[in-house]
Image (cartoon, rainbow, N blue to C red; front, side):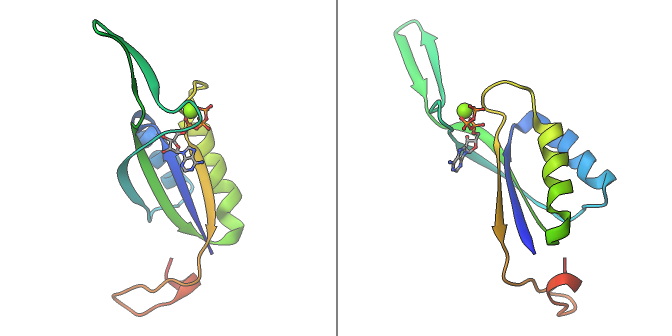
Length: 112
Ligand SMILES: Nc1ncnc2c1ncn2[C@@H]1O[C@H](COP(=O)(O)OP(=O)(O)OP(=O)(O)O)[C@@H](O)[C@H]1O
Ligand SMILES: [Mg+2]
């Protein structure tokens, strides 16, 4: 099992969620986060001069899936989160040691 952790633009969340649903990936955790990439946020012009907003609001999407499903999930997120501009986000894939469904006690592959 792997956790796919994607940092995406807020305005791409609906499209990403729909694409995942269409491919039968339902379980996910969504959080509002702030972050920065290699441009370290954005420079803004203001009357008083230029200043930098170094942490921008983003959405973090987390899904735990079977190893074999990782390519499809990563592709669905990539295609639907992309605008082509800087700040489109990043996807991390992490190993998962175990899963338990609280209601039933189901474990691992039976619990995701
Ligand atoms: N190395 C990293 N570690 C953890 N989070 C990151 C990392 N790089 C980016 N992020 C997260 O992803 C968000 C979007 O990053 P972003 O898309 O700007 O990456 P980038 O490497 O600067 O790519 P681009 O040049 O396309 O902007 C950041 O706001 C941050 O939340
Ligand atoms: Mg960037």
